Image (cartoon, rainbow, N blue to C red; front, side, top):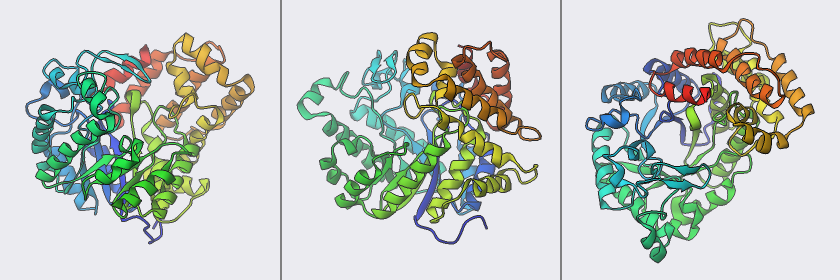
Length: 462
């Protein structure tokens, strides 16, 4: 028994991103589900934008190695046998760029010809559905095909970050009614579709949190999911808002695994963030805690970087706080039962690397950012955030992490971090990005399907 018998949350879940290039193999998902069972999770969501093989939409998923209907049915049964509910998660408003970049779907976009992203600059294609009856009807058809493959009576419809809402076809309407009224109107259409298909809707609560006065207008029964991924995320205020609006014992808190946009995981941030979410969720009557593991910008983080946060979140759901020695021991026991001891210690040590340097902008790690930065970004944005002493300390910490006799993915994590560090130190690279990309592909194929790998490798080469 790795955890005690106390459970503080009725729902204890993991949401795994399978849309940012990396789609795990079924065998990998089986191993993950087995671990979830041991850690007493009872909910799993596979975050999907375009990686389900919809029968009439091959254009969208043909190079993505999507999960098929038969595979979902098998995974659903595998989860059920282990006391875990596989909840469908299909983003349905924003983050639809993988659809809207294709000519057949452009008419559904708020900005069919592209838009200015507030963080990333100009995007050539839209990412948000135009909030009208045609978009709702489109999602209705997707739900009708997707949902029969799940035994769950829940559906996570997404709804987060509709970046360009009001900057295109709905601009005039937004001027009359306001962004949040237009947003809520379309979300209500999606809530109604979920109900039509016999599902209770979960949704990301970030946009509605911008207008707390509108929370009370949400339909009774929907499940707000409050997400935040930093040590100072506003869980306290946002949990109070949804609880006072009548969603006590219904909403979820969703901290982050802290491993995306990193080669080793932001373990200190993940610990603080998960603890904060659990504390404030419990204080305000949250029904569930949903750990989120994203794959932004190509899912370059090694697979093992999920393990520490997965265990920490499970412990928090049981009222436990683990020290690093306990965490390392559980990693060895649960994920490397037939291997030599020491994997957990090295993984936890790697998790401390990002904390040695300033975050350029959450949720990014410094060395990951340095690896991918162009010369202008490196010299003008990143290097002013640190100094030679901090970089030298980071170098020494990387050198101290044991790799002998351990999974080669651990050594690759160190090598990727070192490549970013060498750029900061203006050193001649100790190895080429070509070799790093080759070894990255080898490790990718151990856990994940081929679809998406080419895109992730292209970013490494560039």
